[in-house]
Length: 391
Ligand code: T4K
Image (tube, rainbow, N blue to C red; front, side, top):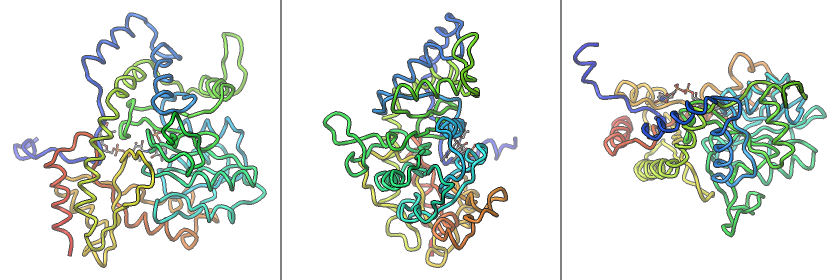
């Protein structure tokens, strides 16, 4: 490393992992060492499942070792076959999980106001082979869960939400067709659908390094999914179904328990950053931010901006590169669009003309750095670059 490299300021990254207090983590590790039980649904795994269900106001949580296996296992658990209607505007894991289950992904376009699957487009995509809808609450923005349920019920379809971004998001219960908890009138968005999946990856609002979960609504399904994530084994001599290995280990469960203590604080820090960005950016010509927060408790998992090159003065990619040169590592989530990657681009539903909104957003989006550890200086650096780039 040269002297100038050593003195260069650390890059401002799109996110930064929320890390538990190391002393507290060491104490838990000591306990795990004493127990000599490091995986296979131990004490910390049990505690974390219970703590998450209570925190999230959901009936049951099945922990997993990442956020992709829950998608694959949810499709297995409901024995989904044939065609699955989904959104192209997501991380590739959503569609990959469908493909790995030997099902056919059918893309529908998205709503420009939320980035989520447009419910009005779903019915036209239903065929006799359709068995499931797999929407994504992209960036933690709630899908129109009420409307999607009406459509699914009318056609006898299952709904599995990829809620990887939606940790802790709460919505007005009635408006989203969900049951409120307590007297609040609020419901966890994670209760929408037959099943909902989460990612606890290091880049997420709440993380267990790698990790994930399925939110389930009844005990029978909880047992079924617990079996599926443990090879289908129920005791030393009994294998009830063809399962897989999706178990979260004790070390990461302990890390997760500690992070749960500080996640409200972390979300609060994100909200403060988001507010500053909105205030500074909402009137910049050619730069669009989402204002409409019709839900009550967002998590500010991401802060997408959308660049119209002609008006703004440079393209999204030019702005991305300019930021990168100056040590600000924003990200183009989600570009390329899933329907444009080689594995899926030849599907009939992947044609660009059928997905104009998703293609537009994918070409214009830039996710700005947002996380609990951003300083005022970091925020001003990001805003300063954007200001210097506008026409
Ligand atoms: N469904 C949806 C809708 C998803 O978004 C995802 C994952 C999944 C399903 C699947 O869940 P998992 O199986 O992944 O649990 C990231 C994540 O790897 C991925 O979890 C996430 N979505 C996706 C949107 O983003 P990358 O390739 O952008 O991550 P990476 O390594 O470039 O990290 C981004 C930035 O984060 C770095 O520039 C710096 C910071 N970072 C990252 C890591 C890993 C750190 O500061 N420390 C770290 O340890 O994919």
